[in-house]
Image 1: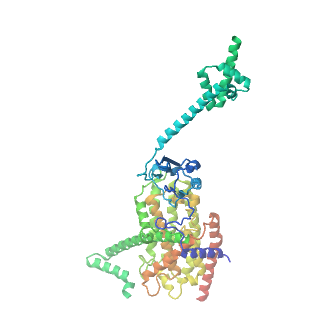
Image 2: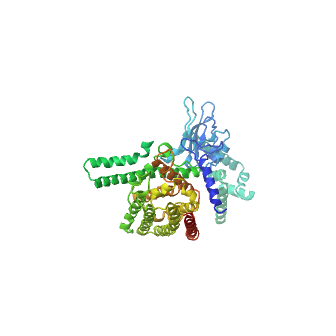
Amino acid sequence: MWGSGILKGLGITFKHLWERKITEQYPEERPKLYPRFRGRLMLNPEKCIVCGMCVKSCPNNVLSFTEARLKESKKKVLTSYTIDHQYCMFCNLCVEACPTNGLYFSHDFEWAAFKREDIKTVYEPDLTGLELLALEEGEKKSAEKEAEDKLLKGVNAMIAAIKKNPARALSKVVESEEEALKLSEILGDDESKIKKLAELMVSDKEKAAKVAKAFLIKGQKKEQEG
Amino acid sequence: MKGAETFFVDLARAIVNGLENMGMSALGAEIILLIIKFACIAGIVTVNIIILIWLERKISGFIQLRLGPNRLGPWGVFQTIADAIKLLTKEDIIPSQTDKIIFRTAPIVFIIISLMLYVVLPFGDGMAIVDLNLGVLYFISVGSLGTIALLMAGWGSNNKWSLLGAMRSVAQMISYEIPLVFSLLAVVMIAGSLNMSDIVNAQDKIWFVFLQPVAFITYFIAATAELNRGPFDMPEAEQELTAGAYTEYSGMRWALFFLAEYTNLFAVSALTAIMFFGGFKGPFLPSWLWLPIKAYIIMLVFFWLKWTLPRIRMDHLMAFSWKVLIPVTLANLVVTGCVLHFLK
């Protein structure tokens, strides 16, 4: 019938008039969040083993922390943990990387803040009563020193090796044993030259090879002149 | 019950008598009474509009499964008041390229014309402000003046959207005026009078909606178009014309247009009730309550239609008026005339 479409439409709107409204009265009525909803990223500092996996996995450098060691057990402890939420893209990679499930997404979605800094979360676990070995800076220094010591040891060992068996030690930087012997002759007893080469051999082999070649060429020129 | 029925009539008589006793001439007392009546109309219209706007927003919300305004006061009843206060305190912006005089007068003309419609409506038994013999004619002729106000607004705004909206509204209102008048004419023929009170009294036994169903339907469609309401809200057509003739208006001037639209809505709904639904006649309740009740029910139907039907296309709108409504109303008129002739 002509006009039946209009009546049908009117019927539908009339039905809607009495139906339950789907508007969510937000501040009073909380939205229903599903268990895997990704709200604010949170840390349970007690579960943290300070492995740093989360920091490594984060693509946006959201996470950062400082650590220390306990004096007695040498166990690592967290001194502070910072989540800079403004860069977080809720990718879940840190949560997946965390071996102790210390990181998790909460259901907190109301983030409004007046300053950018305010949406940063900083965890500072209570460390009173614990004797710490070294705070982060001290630890760093000792690590640097250790590396230096290691390098020095290696250099000394290399110098000794060159003096003891030059053919074998120097063959690592030159192409043949003959060249190695020639090089040892050129070097002779020049301590400074040996030390320089040894240092390079330990830290940068390619450079050492280049330097060795330069020494060889120089030596050959001297021979020809002499 | 008897007291409630004649409450306002008695009150008016008491005021006139009191004024005459104070030594005023009969004419002076009548003039003062008229002023009081107009003030009452203005008050009724304002309060009415506050309710209507809230009601429309609420109903449109409900139809769309929303809640509508619900923050200010219980069920959001104070929302319209807050909006009105906002509009009143808004900056009065008049674009520089407008025709200032026309731009300023258009909303005033529009609201005055809308308010003039109320003069002939019988709100109760013997409660028309002016019981004109040519009430229906007056209503129609004054109502059609609104077109001029819209055209003024559109032209004065010096804006293509405004002008387009105004042109559309002029075309639409003039086209739909004809079926509107023809539909009402059928009712007038049966009642034998253009006086609204007489028309209401003629519906003592049976409402005219049952005697003139075709006229009622054509009238209702034409009235929707006359009111510029959905699905015939071409003059405003937000998606195409921003706000049609009202595009450049803001603040209180815009509010006046808005006010006038709802004023018109109530007036036309009241006219519908008077012409087809027995006006102020009804059982139990006093007569001055029946007309608002009926008018409100009719307005709810207007809301319902607006929030159900999509906007019709402009050329379809015109074609519908000239090719469907006018022939139908004319045929209805002829049939009514023949029947009346043979019944006599």
